Image (cartoon, rainbow, N blue to C red; front, side, top):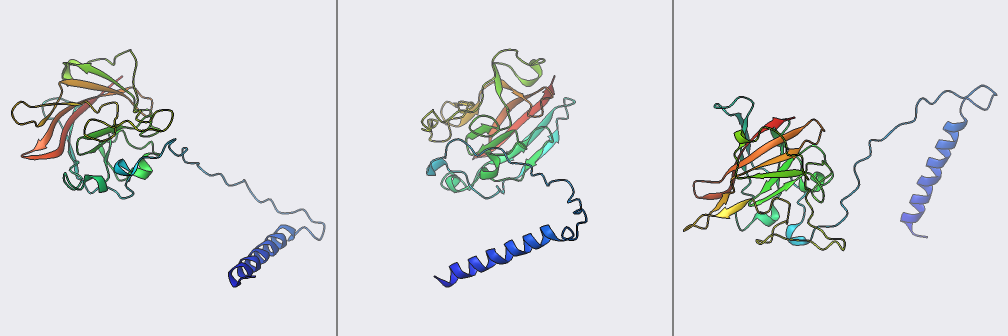
Length: 244
């Protein structure tokens, strides 16, 4: 028998002996055993995602250093604006950098990594370079589903659509992943952009996203405004407000 196995067996024996001694303490003289108190409960984490991400779009286990600046829109009460640094190390390094996660209810960045985010209900939307995902379906357990209102701006949308709301689904039943045309995650909002004539810069479509809130208290309406800061892509500007 190896030294390691002998040591493990010895430790197991000591632990078992100690537990038996504790269980019998105070009970051997015929007196009632002391009340051990209520059983300890554990807040179980959501189940792990049903499919594993392939290496090229893997979940990164570090928190993004990308800054998020949230301000009130000075022109409209109850409307918020965020500037999000989702540059993720630049065009050549984004594959080794994580998403930036936003809490649209608390109006702040969420300091979590990609691995944690896939099991977390604490975020709504996330950005990395051109990629955007919502906390629903294959991206997370938050139930942040979406209805898109085309050819409208944020002030135009005054009530939440009553039709179907979609979630992020990029795995099929065989756990085969669907990628977008630029080999990013094929999320429900992967087609958020068009190309600017002459420059091929990505330009957000004129549309409003209406998201079901993960806390069940109505909806969030959101519009993407920009993807660039100067010449540098991956710098999102977005605006949002709340709906019943």
